[in-house]
Image 1 (cartoon, rainbow, N blue to C red):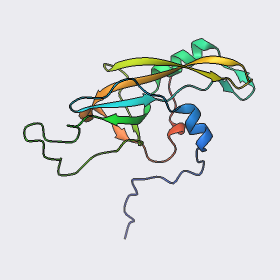
Image 2 (image 1 turned 120 degrees about the vertical axis):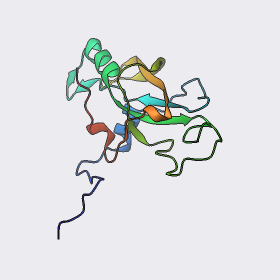
Image 3 (image 1 turned 180 degrees about the horizontal axis):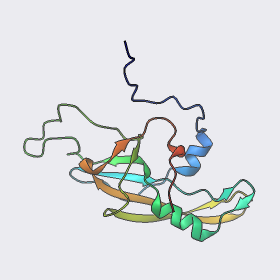
Image 4 (image 1 turned 30 degrees about the vertical axis):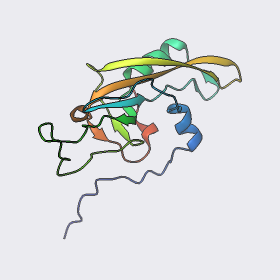
Length: 153
């Protein structure tokens, strides 16, 4: 008899807490979602590839092309029937803190600037990108390491 398809993955390479914090720094988005909207934080691009510093243009392009995000907040009507506010029969598809795949286009995005240190110890201004999206527009919940998803430039 054939084995059932396993829908989750056990990644051999796990992201460390430091790597996740660098990719998804803990930053206040400055907004609270209303209705069925969800605020997600897009993965911040790497500043260097090993000992090579990546130019700002490359980092900026990667920032705007990424499709992996961390759920930061959900509106009170997310995952509820819009006519009677009953919770969906299948429940919430994900929760705050989960990683999700998002569409690249047609969403409300904004930047928050923070001060930080680069890989060489210098002070830099880092851009953190947030998106406001409807609960139905999230494409998938990410299992395993969220840093393995690449932004195609």
